[in-house]
Length: 155
Image 1: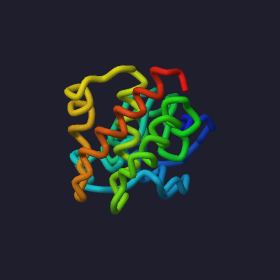
Image 2: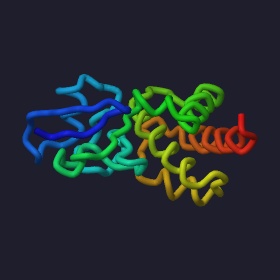
Image 3: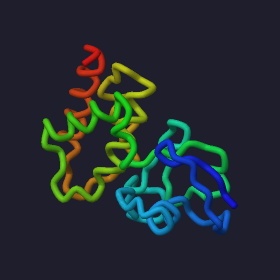
C-alpha cells in the first residue's frame, strides 16, 4: 500500500510504486483537474505540489510521495495564496482554452508561497516550465503580480 495525503486527506492506494502520480490522481482518485500534457515533464500541465514544491505529476512516481502531502488544483484554493491566485486569474481573465491553467496556477502558487514580492524575472523563471498554447503569458504575469500585491496588503 502507498500512503500519502492529497489535499489534506489521507490516501491509501494499492498500486505499482512506479505508476506516475498523475494517473493515480486522475484515475484512482478521480481528481481530474490536473491535466496530462506531454508526459515528459516539459509542458507543466500536470503540475501539483508535493510538500509545497511544484512538481510534474506525469514523471513523479507514487513511491516518491509516500508519507508526503500532495496538493492539486482541487485543493490549492484552501490556502490564502491559492485563493489570491485564483481570484487574480479571474480578475485578469487569464484563461482562453484553459487546458494549461491548473498547472499555471499551481506553479504561481508555489512561487508566491516562497517569494512574496517576486520580480518580473522571478515570475518568468518560476513559470518558464509552463507552456500555454493560447499565449496568455502577459495575462499570467499580470495575474501573478496582482496576487502578489493582494497578498502584500494582507487581503
